[in-house]
Length: 97
Image 1: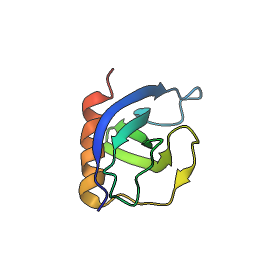
Image 2 (image 1 turned 180 degrees about the vertical axis):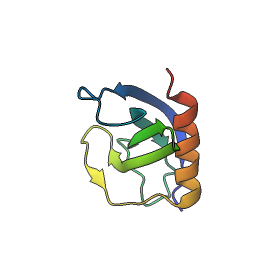
Image 3 (image 1 turned 45 degrees about the vertical axis):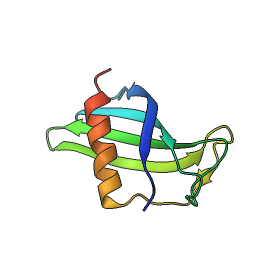
Image 4 (image 1 turned 120 degrees about the vertical axis):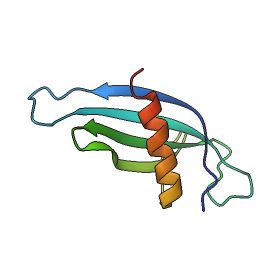
């Protein structure tokens, strides 16, 4: 399990210029604090980019990946169900900024 501690974020509402998609979409860049003993740890820092969707069917994460801050190198790790639920709750709470 990845030690997931969100320490900050930036968010941008994504526009659908053609009106093809229902609901609202947000791109989140989450800053994570990762324990030095974790295999995911990087001294540059670790981030999580995610697309959060809120529509008539509810809220969901449609895409995400972990990356090394600074180099933007994509890290080959997945989130576990509990971690994804935590990210979903965080995005839901912070989407209206």
